[in-house]
Length: 147
Image 1: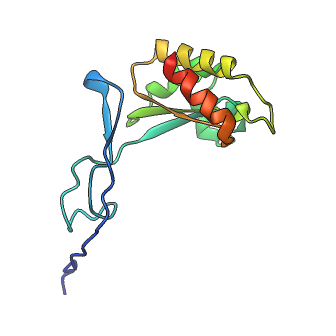
Image 2: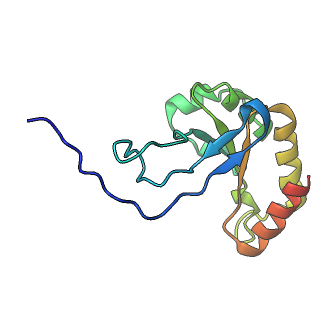
Image 3: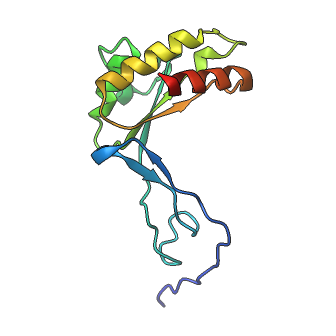
């Protein structure tokens, strides 16, 4: 007996978001079907792969394959350049978790400098993830956007 998918109506819509500009721009979302339910309706923008890089230190990555891939990298810029070569990667996500005031409490200026340095050396679109502290993230996002 063959599988006959039952079509389901999905009433919500996932808005499309464009990361980057030009040829390397990436569009996420934009469909009104459940994820991967291509039998209900066409998915306009296929799923993308982002590589998350943290400023808290990639030594937290304990997977042998990742350690080998990033061997010799010491700064966020080094990690970003290496991540850009990862097969299948569509965009980078810079996670500034060390900016958390309850943790390391790196300054906004240091985080902006890291983001700008990465943006200067990579051609992939970049997404920014904050430290989950509302006040600090507000400052961080606005300063990085200005830079």
